Image: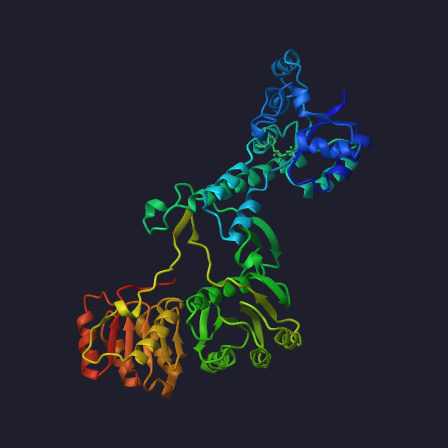
Length: 527
Ligand SMILES: NC(=O)c1ncn([C@@H]2O[C@H](COP(=O)(O)O)[C@@H](O)[C@H]2O)c1NC=O
């Protein structure tokens, strides 16, 4: 008996030569849905339309094409079960050996809508809903469930491997291959459903109410790149891209070595911190990061000067750093950046003459990410037996809402400096203390197990430069010791969340030492 293959593809890439080989080399008979059948007919490949085979026309503008017992009976029947075979015979159903389906391009449709900036109009919703494939996933799932007997391909990338398999097994397919194909189907349909759910969820309010977090957590992504290794060479790693394609998956790498796992983690930390400085009125800003923490961050009148000041903040740590800029890379900045060893640079754009200069450092990875602001709305951490999910920390209390708790009050310039320090410390691992002056970091105490330790590191790094500087703390001061250490080093203003039962002790110490203190009311722990 000839073997039956069911082909129903939206993406017709490689379809014709593949179908030709199936028919001519392996003697398959083909049945296909309307558009696929038309493509094959145009290439003179013999094909029967699904509607002719089932006797049921495509209806509802294509919403029902292949949803028919003659199709799903042929896909689900167990070849080794007499009762199933009897059902097929009585219903004149032919078993189907091979199913080739790729789905309506739902993710691409949403991507296009996002690029046009319209994902929520009535028209956009109608368009997206029509791209929710129903018949395709149904066939894929039927065939995948019956992998004991049926082979199912859900992407044109599998055509070659399938033909090789036929070649190697005298026209047959091994059970192991069919099982792998089934696994890929369930991965694909899960990701497809996740994209649909995410699209529908996006119109919901982005409240911090836990009830608005999804009832079922679905983290989906398509393998974009096998990374050489993870954080360490003995850890496997893969970069998955979510749909629609945005963020780092859509960034342009102008030059440099392949991105590593650690590069991407650092780049994302760099993006998050520079995103804090991307509003229209923001001055040119540069951040240099090492191991996820800013080692130097500065604002200035030009981006070249901002980079220079960020580098000067801690030129030792900047070696091998990751740089993020909130302005296009210009020639002068490029020139300055090539004077030291850097791992990666990310900026919203790059001037042509700057690109030419950077090319001299051929290993240096330069990435262009025009949208530095948009990140994932949630963060997820793996723990044994589950995941922890929270809203990304998008909150920032504006200085106008801070509580100035000391007799001395900041003038506008001092308040702006305190706001700079506050926005930097938000992105430093806890316990975090940052010392800044003239919109540049002078000292960064990161990831310490006690706040005094973080303060000591930041102040020691700042040294004499701490005279007249500002200190920011990501969490409240449990005691007044950090305030006293800061004042002794020359700090004139402190910004911290407040909220300790001993806040008053810190305030009394600040008043006694003539230090300005602002309480923001919100802490920014970062683990
Ligand atoms: N409704 C159905 O019964 C149905 N059957 C197959 N499809 C999809 O239709 C596409 C192929 O259509 P065509 O062969 O007409 O170009 C495939 O992406 C396939 O997944 C369907 N479309 C949507 O649900």
